Length: 206
Length: 206
DNA sequence: CATAAATTTGTACTCAGTCTAAGTTTGGCT
DNA sequence: AGCCAAACTTAGACTGAGTACAAATTTATG
Image (cartoon, rainbow over the protein chains, first blue to last red):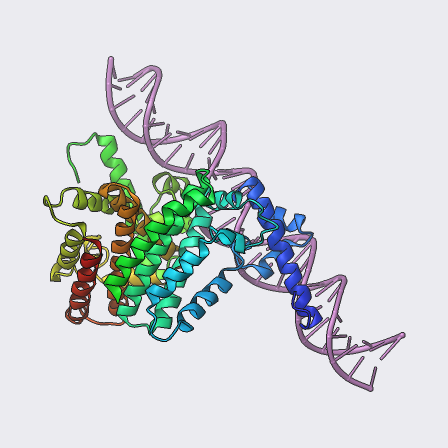
């Protein structure tokens, strides 16, 4: 934790992380709708109001890092090598995310708290509210990319198609993960599918 | 209203439509979040419980015809001419929907109640909950199409990309509509964009 | 007309999320 | 050190969506 921040700020970050961690553990353990915000507050030894002070909705307790992801995506697009197409950028980023160490996006999040990524994604998959939140943030990502590309109608079309492909691929990874397949098997299915999908995207958009 | 239905069924359909009409009018008039379900119930002269008997959520009061749209889309895919690609099917359907008489999808819905489509879509656009509901149903449409295509990963990729394109185009139509442009101006922007977008889709997916 | 099934209703409840006013903690200052 | 003001937290009451259930009403059919 960033040590040269004002003491107050550091404490706030700690509290925030503590609440989110406690909440995530409870949600994964019992299911998202089965846990009330009041229970989260009690378990985190904080008042319900404080929970809503730090997080603007119950859903955000588990998806607390979405703003970071959005910033990362925007940066990815802006800082891509001169002349590289966005499709190529996302192809490389996606394939890199399939590398053993962080398959399924999940391990980037709190690997301590979620030693088993599967439980985390099962929790998300089983909750209509959390899936809705995912859709919302997917849309935001597409907007971010479209904006980074310039914001024209053509840019928005390109961003949306890339988003659609990534969404299906991530969905399939999750499906296979929840069906009990291991990283090796998943990679064997996803890598060729991704190569082909990004190829057609590249042909279409470049 | 289908006259050879059992009396009871006919009455239920009437009640359902009446509640939905009253609700839509109130939402368009005052905004979705500014109207409570209790107020809708009172205005429709029915109890709150009855409202939830007919509609499973407040959002469904305004989007009451989504199941029909989904069925229509599935039919569109299934009944397309032998040998015609889905992309071609959707291109034609989309372009047909731009014809003067039902621009903006909106006129298919209760043209009596919504003499001005703009107000209806402004209401939707101003409500986070309604936009979330739209995203959910867009996802369902994509699933329906993917299923109608066969349900493989490649089918899901194709359906998602078509959905992405349609989503952006509809979004742009709405944006222009809310910016005060008339059908003529909108068509002038959208038709060429759609032609180009569906062309690239066809190149990519066929 | 009677009666059983289907609908509707009132009431009471849970939970997310907001508001407010009062309490507590903290950093900065003398 | 000790005080003050700003920042943070809290309790508690409130709103509104959605659910549960049992009582009351309506309707189809004999």
